[in-house]
Image (spheres, rainbow, N blue to C red):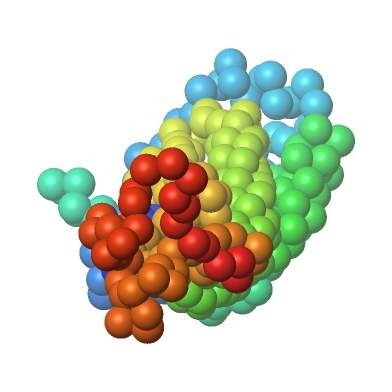
Length: 316
């Protein structure tokens, strides 16, 4: 098969590596452009405030009041934010920023603004909803909520770093994979890079899923009485975990390419050399120099072929 076979052998892992890269790029692009529907649909976390109510569930508020004396400060703060149009209908959180917008009567969402892009971004509802100095901030100071948000803030930095490293390693995997066409050593180097890439993309995926699931729980725990809903972005997580699957599969096939498809042609001319100290037939001395290998088949004149006749050999 030769080089053509070698190319065919690495085509599958290379295609899987490129697919994993595409998934990562989609994750990075979520919420970066308010005018593109694909990017608007890709988010980790969504806060839906379109059904915000000024008549909250008093029983649920009483549960919160056991922790903090909130009176009506949360309601007043949210009412003020809504009347000042600071409280939009929804907030979608991506890797770099968040986007906000409005929902019409047919539940069609229109993104009106996206925040500034930042590395290590995390969504802080107190700042975004202008709730500074209200009872909401007091609730965030409560140990349960404060610990949850502090963990979200800290882990988001590690998560962002893991995504950056995974992206760089995916690009490196594709570049190094080109050299795998020529030898198994190239496949070995690519397998090592692919293994590291799989570790980081899995770490990023696990962290994102757990982190934003916790954030949903935090929002549900004290904003639910005001009919503010929180949810995970199923499309973003689906793309992310699909990228993880592609990464694992590519690493497996890169490993196989180390053991198979050497790239050397199986059809090579075999040269057989004579071994030393062997014997070969020579011309009969009775026939002179013109004798050939078949001389022993014709007896020389005056000599009998019976008895002790012999055929001469030479040592080489």
